[in-house]
Image (cartoon, rainbow, N blue to C red):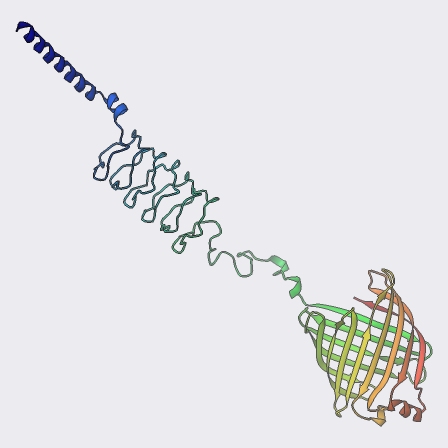
Length: 399
């Protein structure tokens, strides 16, 4: 009996020692930190608004049902967290460091991004199709690998971004920006400046006919419209030194890339009559120079002049230029030796040498003229030549 009492006393003491040891371990913070794990905990009803999460390791936590609206996330390390099911609609992200977060599965459709600093975030896998970007500050973000094909940019304010809309008064209409032009005046574009030019297509002497033939064009204006003066004819160098010329003053305007139109008035010294003139001048395929002009005289007579020419370059300076022309009238005019239909055909071939920057080209050539149709008989009755040919020499130039 005495021995039995001693054994009971020893067992009671041992139990007290073990119980005291358990309380001591429970009171040691280091022991709690090492042994407590929250990976299997249900946080659905936990109120963590006053908790300090700065040193918590939540890498194994399931946040599917957590209400974190009152949490201070400023010092949280969430680099290992699975945010796939997190509802962060009420979270204050203003001080969160999300540089190491994996946002590939995050649903951020209800998040307020007004104060988020996302400069260090990796957005390469983010699905932002449902996000409201109206208040986002993305000045420090790296967008190089972002897929924004599904984003709604309708309410984004990008006025501060490079390439934004310029102010209404950013530049004055005349590009002066208020600076005066000085004594030289306002500058002009080359295409807006009126220019002028003179072209003498032919100025040559016909030895057999003893006459000088000429054809001169002059113009003033711009590329889109000009005032043109044209004169062609011949001057006799013997006997009465008769002058036959047809001179016109016309408005010139391009009709297409290769064709120009003319309309104006003309005067013919051969029949001493004025006329209205209209014509088309340009370049046909294979660089054939072509012109067609019609004249309506005051007596109702209509004259049609057709001409074509081609420049065949032998070298950079030597040029062969064949040229032909036709003249036709709408009715007979016996007083002026005119018959109805085609009256005259003329042709000339010149050999030219271009010099002085191709602006001056002396030439020699052969010319041929003949009457056509009823005009042949009329000229025979008046003892005039029907056919004629002659050597020619002259010069062509422009400036």
